[in-house]
Length: 444
Image 1 (tube, rainbow, N blue to C red):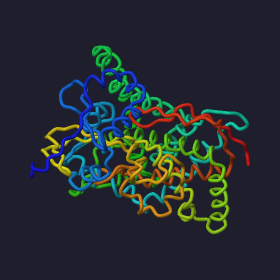
Image 2 (image 1 turned 135 degrees about the vertical axis):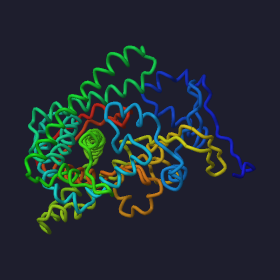
Image 3 (image 1 turned 60 degrees about the vertical axis):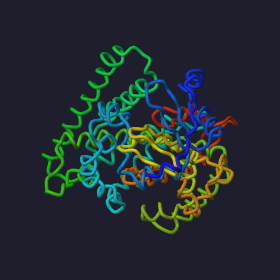
Image 4 (image 1 turned 90 degrees about the horizontal axis):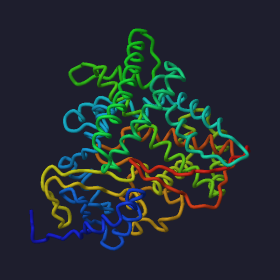
């Protein structure tokens, strides 16, 4: 390693962090932008607990860590320890050989060919939930999309094998665990006994309740001998290289991961997309015209989705401006170097997808909603990471895109959407969540 080219990474002093602590707790994004604008695309932040954290909005650095030299980087304990205690050791929370083994096993279930089998279930869930939107008055749209995303995941996994009461309980438990994890990560100054002994044990108990429900669902499917050709059947059919199937507890870990990763990010994205469309009647008109044209050209659902190219661009632009996974974290296993920056072993790295997606060097008029920029996605692929990158890129990216395209189609085909002339508000937690997404819907 050539240390002659060593570049100093500018550092935000500990005092500045303390002075801005409450502001950071509420919303860290403006604080990070100030530092990026002042110090450059990569800086260190001292947070008073040992080694500093390195923040970056350099897409080349992100690509190096996530793709080119990914073997030297692992996820931080936020996912491998903190999240894992609620969700188990599934794809999102595992590392090393265990992760590789699970990824190889599960990947085929999310290939486009396999997803065709559950497309009708996705579309039916979308139509049902979109139909529940109240018309003629301003409403918060996030709860509708939150229910839609969870219903879609559950119906895709289990077809009709789960009742509404069970779905409601599983959704409550999943969201309760997420909220608890946010408290642990964002409010570490709270009393340790309160967090660990009372609330943590309570939420781990809730997760065990969900596991009991899922064990019964899996056992019932196995004993029935009936195929539904849903994701559960695909996962039950999957075999490791030695010919064995997934053990039930590992299967339940993966299902819990799908509940969490498959519904929160999608509901966030759909809410932001609806807000952007409400402020752009021209885009709504283009989508509506595209729907009419596609419906005349095909009756095949998959071909219909492929024909809705502008709708896809709208979703892509929404995820550029408001990426649900707005930070991606990694820790390097051995000392490394990128463009002269020495990265000591065990350095915590946080890549701001929010900033990369709005970086003026890579995006023209970066703060504006312009779906047409994705007509030629090759121009922006180097600075666009809505589903991550490299071997750990989100396994459900195709599933999510199909679901969101169908949801936007159903939304625009049924309703004209308007909003009050206020800025879109955000709530950065584990994912980038919308805040006060108040919109008005009128039947077309």
